[in-house]
Length: 215
Length: 211
Image 1: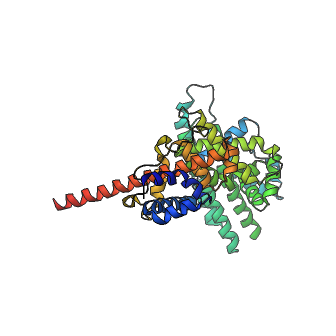
Image 2: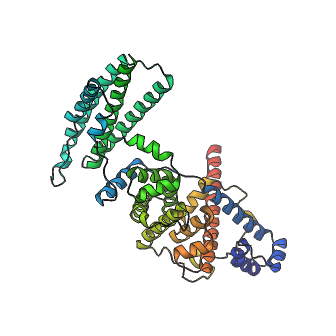
Image 3: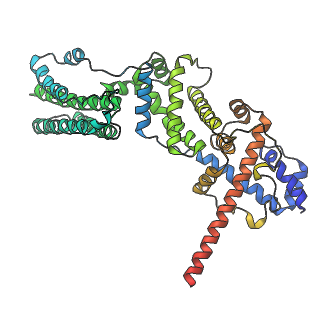
């Protein structure tokens, strides 16, 4: 087959692929192995490309953290804040409130230091932040150990749910700590780390509460 | 507690989540992000071929989404709206680059950018023998000029129609078809080149083994 005809076919191959098929090109195709090969290649490329569409990837957690920071900066969303009154209203008995408060005090006294954005030495505060987090982690681990020793949950489903929540809280803490380590000036990351610690404290307090109720 | 809120939101319908987000509910924003992040990020990554840039663009797309979410009236599906917004964010970024990325109104001569008919067009020795795998295709896509890559990703990977692409990219339907064809032709060349390189490598390895 002549290269001129093949070249013409190449120019119109796009139309052919779009379904606009002429008799002249059908005839050409029937007699030209090279152009049949080209058409087959195009069809394979299209088929493989459509399969690519079903593959997706996960962006890193930093995207959400940065996005959340920006949304808060613009006032589109508010940062979550703890409402102590609503938390304590869950505990009708003063003794339980006290047990829970002990865990929250633990959270409060070891709060991660806030960086001053106008302070040019803010970057130097990383050791301070990470050492506070480490101390906090240690105390919480100790509290968790004591709680787990005394904890006895007869309902296996609730026990599994609480363990899953604890594991999730630990993962959250680990992720936030890593972000704080990498971005010590990121105030939102520190807020999240504080929240993560407080969530864990709250979980432990819930376990204490259930233990008391079950006795 | 944030987690409890998430669980509650997770049980809501998409319309309810959207309504909560329009009211500024932070958990609803997070839920929307969780639901759509993979698709948006994957689209960005395919179009720019760089993870850092794709993450930047994903953030920008969601930021614009959340800024405009109050204006969404449901004329189209929410995911379609978001997807189109993400495509526009990517195209805006590509247009800012120095390379003439979306030159869709350029000449439609078949031989520009080296994608036109060649003397060896479809030669039997160059047929792709059904050996295209995803990795090869992905690598070849990364080598496409950005304008070609964008249109190929939109049409052949993401399944957009030419009229939608023409609308998004502000070009004619004819140009969209023409550019897609050129993109496919260029891909074919790149895949052939890769196949030839692999064959050459094998021969070299075999020669080395004999020596």
